[in-house]
Structure formats: C-alpha cells, structure tokens
Length: 152
Image (tube, rainbow, N blue to C red; front, side, top):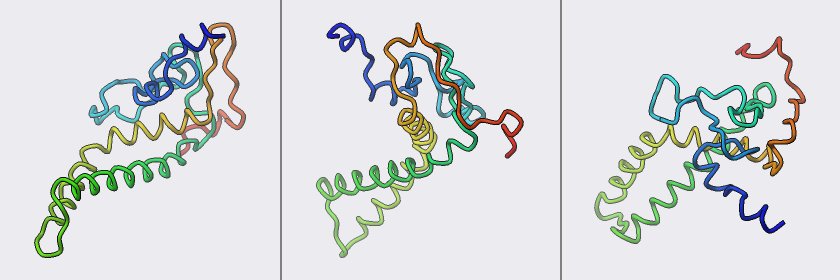
C-alpha cells in the first residue's frame, strides 16, 4: 500500500498539465500549446495512454462555464489583493482603473489556459484515478448516444 502511494502521480500537477484523470499520464488535448488557436479546444476522443473516454456524455463540458467563472473570480480577487498590498487603492487617483485595465488584459491573455484548466478540472471530478488502469478497462459512458454526437 505504501509503494502504491509513492508511485501515485500528483492530482494537482496532472490537472495543471491537462492529463487524463484516470491514468494521469496521457494528455487530454491534441496539442500541448494552449495558444494554438485552431486546435486549443480539440480534445482526444480517448486518452492515448489508458483509453478513457474524454466526453463521458453529450454536452458534458457545459458545466465548465461554472468552473471557468470561479477561476476568473479567484484570479481577479487575487490580483486585486496583490494590487492593494503592493500599490494601494485610492479613490483620489486612478490606481483602481489601472488595476481594472491590467486585470482585464491578463484575463484575456490567460483565457485559453483557463479554458483548458476548467475542462481538465471538470473531467477530473467525474473520472477518478485508477491505480490499476493497465489491467482494467475504462468504464463505458452511461448516456452517450452515438447518433446524437456532434449535433451542435
């Protein structure tokens, strides 16, 4: 049991690196570059390492909007607190508007990364790590109707 824990890949690192939550080795996206705008949201249909299905039901990734929203709010609060501590906030000058502009620019620049991170987090909450993924088959998708795939 102790050997298994030592060899278990880190959950946070696998999510940040956009790796499959089942094996934590295969990459979820077809390209590692989030700023390849033609392919930044294209995901592998199955994990290239363990075969885990990445879209476990039709419309599965609609929930990532909530995750992305939470990430952007957390990022904005963190930058505001950092701005407040380092530079300060005053109504007597325009420091608050400078923070607003810089934060908006950073949010736009980080959008591809946040989109990928939210998809990786969302999938990891529904597909758990399997220490014996080499010897077991991934679970079949419950509510996937092949005829209705990619209808939107």
